[in-house]
Length: 299
Image (cartoon, helix red, strand yellow):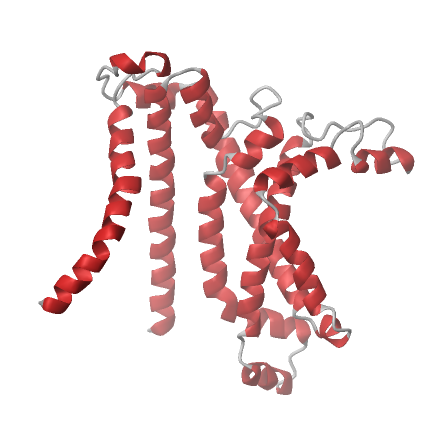
């Protein structure tokens, strides 16, 4: 009992911070989602409206496009690009060619630069690179005759989503790559040697030996990348401001716009709860599928 009390006392500060920074805001946000709380009438508080905010959210035609932008463009496409490029870069950094010329450490160091760059700085730099007037990409396009006119990458609906995904990928890809690289380096050399003796070439070794060993790290990075991307606000807002118009509006920027532009704090709270619920359901289903898969492999 003395040991249990000692452990409990040690956990009190952690429990306090979890309650104060997570539990209380969540409960308060849930309560606000059932009211008509308005930013411009905070002193009056909000009146209880029940499920009206949720009904308005579901029946809003704009919400369908916002949801599509968030799930398809921002999350599915963004995460797929990051995981795919991360795997390819990890195999490249672990290749015998780079090791032969002692370039592995240099490439790993270069890979850390985007990761160490703050998100705000990364977006500002990329806005300059993609600028239709002074951006280096447009200068190359005009100089080499690739196009006749500059392209407004962050204002043209044909290029804006690929541009946003490029910015997000550049800034977040190093973490994914280094995680996969660490997993790749942990593959037992005995297994690789056995595969080589059996006649497996480099591609077969990568597909049938190394990739299965990397499955746990891939699972974790897919899950974490999905959480980080689905809730992303900084990259979309600083890149386009949810524009042109509201073309790139996602759920995170919609929460901001409804709360601090339209003043509909209750509606914004409902949208935030919907976002949290979607990610919670995704996490539970994803982890359950992974657990079932692992149990099948064991038995």
